[in-house]
Image 1 (spheres, one colour):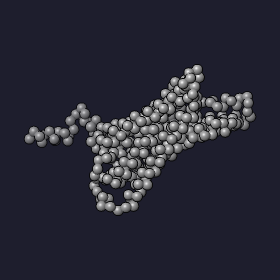
Image 2 (cartoon, rainbow, N blue to C red):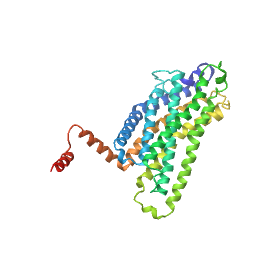
Image 3 (tube, one colour):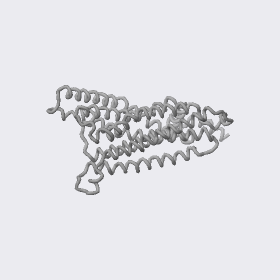
Image 4 (cartoon, one colour):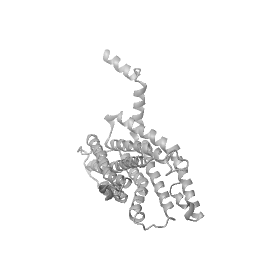
Length: 333
């Protein structure tokens, strides 16, 4: 399986058994994800999107960002089974995909990761604006919806810059233009900087500003227009979870760019460990697609009320509810 094939004739049986053990562990982890995490993530992401979009009037600024992350999570839910059922992740693979499918999956994965990271980042910055200037509408739901549209557009444009490197890395060297761009490490460097370094610095800056405001006592602290205090806990939890789940993946990109690609790790003995850690880090990244909606469901106080309203609305679709009957009677009398 994957890199283990190089050990059949050239290396010791100890290294080969270690590689096979890594493959077995990775196969089990992939199976657990597909049986438990994938259906949970799919259901809760759909539920988060449907419940909030059916209650647009009551949506707040954080709700818009979490809906945006849920849509990106659904994209990850589409990518995950295709990758996890391939020979890269499991011994009991269902298929092997070609370079075109690999590039498509990689671009969708990169777009989703950028949308998730920048939604988390802008949620932190908008939360600071809402705390500092509650009566302005800079962080309103209307503005946030447009910001989320720009996030998707920017993620697509950024991914296409990496797409050129990945495509040229998989096609013939006869094309002069592509022969100069056959550098997958350049694409990884772009994703590392734009997808991780920039959001991390922005979140750190936002948290410094938020902590400064929380220490200062101002007359606006009693303002009724402020966000629910539970949103602060949800913000902290979401930022921590996102960076915990995505940091290992971006660190493997850094290692591939700085260590593996230049040939500093020349011994094949270390390659199985590197590829195993890279696959595990990608599994952790996929896990963000179910961790975020679960956390939103548990920590958002208004979600249960929105869900109950939606269920009542569905129940009353084909029959008039008692509340509606009483309203009609009052209008007639």
